[in-house]
Image 1 (cartoon, rainbow, N blue to C red):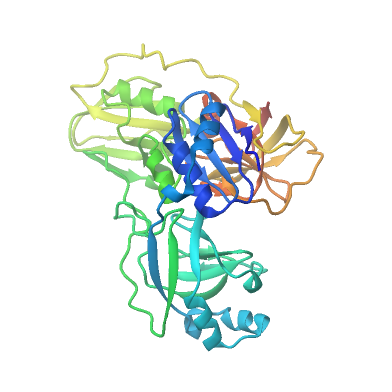
Image 2 (tube, rainbow, N blue to C red):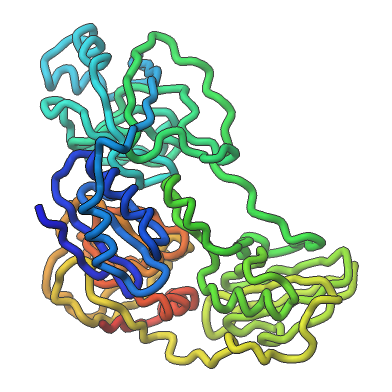
Length: 456
């Protein structure tokens, strides 16, 4: 199949490569990642989602694909012990009845399997494996479990996978491993990467589950104590694209320019950690003389203006108005910029409820849509209710492909979801449009009840 390249916003391409082997898919990804200007390459079921640091270069991708050689990409190999005992395998009996074999025959067959991690998605480090026998397929459970224990080995459709952390899930659970699949304290935190091979080693008894960290504590802002409303603040830094390889979104501030401006005015480097506040600015106490700068929607603190705070003093910014979020940078009193802002980033921002997008990467007739923002919103995504007729139904199951901050998904229930900076890196939903990079800041300010129009 000749690769199909489709725009995914103004800085990315969706490259659909068809039903190729996992080895060829990952050889292509390795080749693309080594190309100039490529920030990230997210592997999907039958695609590569290529993000650039500037305007996309289709010819760069095509050259890389033409030179990809699966024989020169040696996969990492793992032997994973799995207990298929009844207490760890609530759905194994159903599978055995379905395929009419007994437990010893199943275990013997399992030993000969070689699974290949095709791509990551769903949760941190969760790998979708090829190589599960076609005749052993089972559909997803009709109702998801509220909690699937970490280490659970499960199947759904053609794929197998391990739940890396405790999470809800609708796959069929056949066993469990104590292997440390994910530990945020490690580098890298994921045991299995896309392209790795796994051999299953059945065991009778499960080893003790190791102590792991699902996430690392956010960086601290020295000299600051959050006294009240801390749940409305998140410490953020610059986007980290290396996290894609672990199955994590790059994160970063919802509005990188406002965060950068606040840091500059506070005398910090552009990527210094700062507080991203939603709805309310928390009450803060400072143990040393400091300067604080607020940028974003309005609150009780002055906009883009350094404010000196003495050691031992408290400040509070109250409720956020005219939007949802803002960024509070803290610097030392001898490095803050005096007076107001003369920084070129401090530009007027108006009409936040009209957002420019690019059609695709999936082909649909949708070119504009007005939506109402629901209360289901966070840094992962913003769910919206369309107010205009869409005119077509979204398919219920598409091959999973990459996503980015600014991707808009159309779900089968008719809702639209705009991805935030902590989005899942892959998803199996239709993507009718993608927000331009210079317009993504507007997502940060959308509040429940707002009406927003997306225009391609």
